[in-house]
Image (cartoon, rainbow, N blue to C red; front, side, top):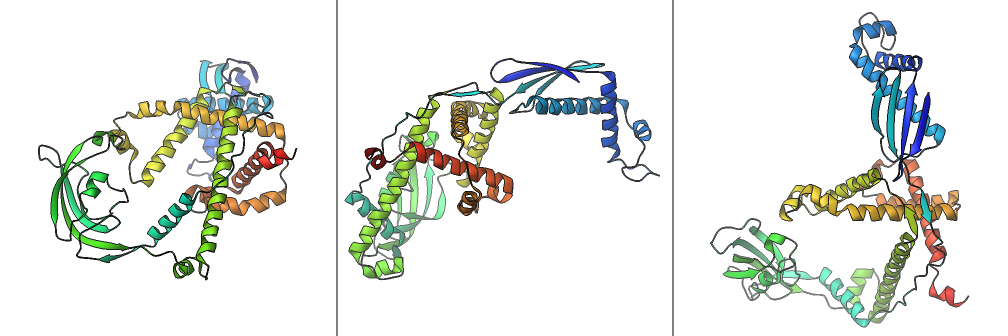
Length: 428
């Protein structure tokens, strides 16, 4: 085998191969051997068919094409190993001569990353303070979660749950798609339905009907409904009065499984909120650090890497929409967007994601954190719990899990090193 290669810009190399007839003959033999292993010919055991018999049974064009395919694959893999090249996508192939065979491969390779000194990046730590309103809101949500409902003959009010039939019409009296439902449960004031709709339910009793106009918000998630006026016909089937629990020791005991004084419980909530805010602040600091880190990186990202990341984003989008019971096609239809336009809109996001990964990868390479077997063993249960309910986690190999866990530990050590707390900085 002989080859020459050169960089052609944007993390690409071009390789020119020249194979002698003798080398091609070896690949022809490999093509016949691979084919023979799957052939069934009367009088011969599987895998034991002589190659001359195999060749007679096959179309010469098939042998010729398969020979070239194996030759290209074999020479390409030998080249990658010998030159220690890290490709990021399958190469583009161009055969310029048949015999002796000459072909060119354009290979997108893992880009060279230049990362300037990031040790001087500083992201101040915000002081965590919990306002009384935050505690009150938490308690209010807790009460809502444990609110019970009792059927009533009274008119509905905010906080009550109603069961209704409804359908919507345009100004010409024609039914509007996706505005009809039966036995639909609504908690008035929860904001699941638009405000105009919920407000018109207030005061209605079971068995009552009402016709009214409702205007959809200008920022409604469906563009075709923004600022739209729909004429609704509503029938109230049932009204359930909300009975919110009182915050007392009996209610707290049901939640905690033991007697706790109200003041102590409120302190516990405040501590929980403070810890949660610390975690949120920590994530925000990491994100701000990454934003500054990316400014220090110089890299030419191959188009193939961007396209691959775009493929991943598209699949991610489809999965997220499916979680809401919406197909990708329906989303494009309602948002009046073409698939290629939507994909192109995500290009900047794909490039940003890749730049972040490459910057962090280069930083971790510089840091050379050593991860012990004990650290991996201690971290693995947390990682497996995180993926327990996800299909991806069930299919993941042990090798992949270990690599992911090592990366998690490395990133944690990296941020611990460069995001020191204010208290630590003050003691220097």
